[in-house]
Structures are given as structure tokens and as C-alpha cells.
Image 1: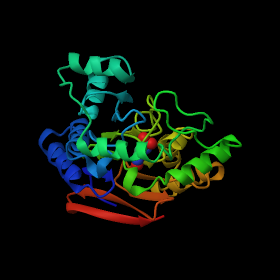
Image 2 (image 1 turned 30 degrees about the vertical axis):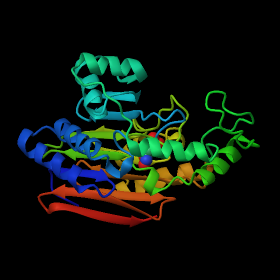
Image 3 (image 1 turned 180 degrees about the vertical axis):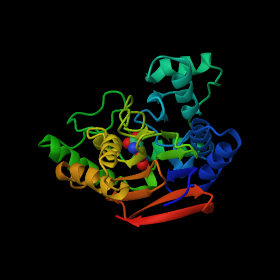
Length: 321
Ligand code: SD4
């Protein structure tokens, strides 16, 4: 338990937590805090899986997903598969503030960003090119396709035929070895001393994803959820699976009925595990009165950061999965 105000985020990225905290103290805006904290991770390329230069898709391109949610009025701004803009969470914030929409995607999300004054630039780096080249050399396996003929565009494959849908998921996910090092979204929750909650996410998704893929991070109730009357929740992990269950929404609804944050997360993960026993994922949640909980599955452990007046500087906590 921590006093309000508070900032919490997924993974051991205290520089993002501190940036959000400083902004929260100076601006008193939980939305500014979440945007600033996630932006810090986009600049730092946290874990290689936030921001530019990570997770090249089958064409070698990095695309970004991000979302920000205001738990006071239940407004959301999000971008999916946005190309050529480094500050995806900033664009999500503009979708929230400057449009009546919730989610913009792809090239047209980039056009919107440029209209809003964001700079268009390449998201590729030597590192992402190298990852892409290495993958091409291995006949582009593993990846997220299950077709038996080569991919006509890349000539990669053929990929292994899959027997059934669930089996396909399990085989391909076991091969993909989704883990902490290739699969870390920043998800952040901020609550001010009046109990105003905001949550946000930013990620470059998955290595070698099929171009056009959007994960859970910009999907309301999947990547995050916030509600001033309850608290906030954020998710990280295998987004293709998670978005089928809306775990952040489930956690908030359980907490609304009095379940503790940790128990609510365990329940949400267990629901997914019934269908996808090898699934990897983690959530962290904060109640509106400052109770923090976390749980994970499939990783060896999950780390998260907490900053408040009683956690100074940022404390990094670890839970075993
Ligand atoms: C996704 N959930 O795009 C994101 C990736 C991630 O921890 O969380 N990595 O599937």
C-alpha cells in the first residue's frame, strides 16, 4: 500500500517512473504524467521493445502501438501499427484530446500525427536491420504464420502446418520463445492525491510480426484500463492472446467488486491459462486508494516500479511467476 499520489509501471524502468513522477508533481496532471513516463521509455527504447528500432516485422519495419486512458471521463486515445513516428504515446494523447475517436491506425495515424506537428522519421536502426537480416538468414523461422507455402513477398518459409487453432497457438508460441527479453511493453498508471486515475501503454509489439499486426496495447481493456471509481490496470505479454480476454478490464471489474488487485490479476491470468496453458503475461494494478498488486505467468519473474512519497526514489519490486 502506498499513499497517493502514485506512479506505477511494468518492468524495471525507473527512469520512466521518475519522469512521470516529476511531471505529476509539477503539472498535477495524471495524463501528462503517463504521457511523459511512456515517452521517456520511447526515447530510451526500454527493453528494445518500446519505441523505435525494435521488433522489426516480416518486412523489417518497426511499427508502434500506444494508448492513454483518462479514468475520470473514460476517454481514450490510441494508435495501432503507426509508422514513422517515434512518439506513439504522444500521438495517442492527441487522439484523446483533439478528436472524438478512440483508435487511429497505420499510415493514416501517421498522417494525423504529422498534422499535429510530430516529425516523420524512420523507425529502423542498425540494430533492427541486423535482427531482420539474421531472421532472414534462418529462413525467417520462427514467425507468426502457419501457411505451408512460402510467403510470396519475402520467399520465407514454408512454415510448419498446424493441426488446430489452439494447437497452432501453442506450437508457434513455444517456438517463438516469447519471453521477457523480446516482449516488454511499458504500461503505466498514475493516480493523483484526489484519486484521478490515468493509464497508458507503449510498445513496438513482437519480433517478426506479420505486417499490419496490432497487439493488445492500444486495445481498451486489454493493454490497460482506468476508472476513477476503482483504479487502474496495465498488461504486458503475449498480446495476441491477451486481447481475446480483455484482462485489464476484467481486473478493474473484479476490483470494483472488492477483490484485491493481486487476486484480480491472478483470476484474469487463470482464465487465459485455461485456454492457452503456455501463455506469457503479467499485469500490475493499483486501487484508487493506493493498493498495488501484480502477478505473472510464463516469465520466470516480473518486475514493476512504484514511485510515491513513501517510495523515494522509485522502488523496483519483483514477483515470481
Ligand atoms: C504486444 N503486449 O504487442 C505487447 C508486447 C508486450 O511485453 O507486452 N510485451 O503483444
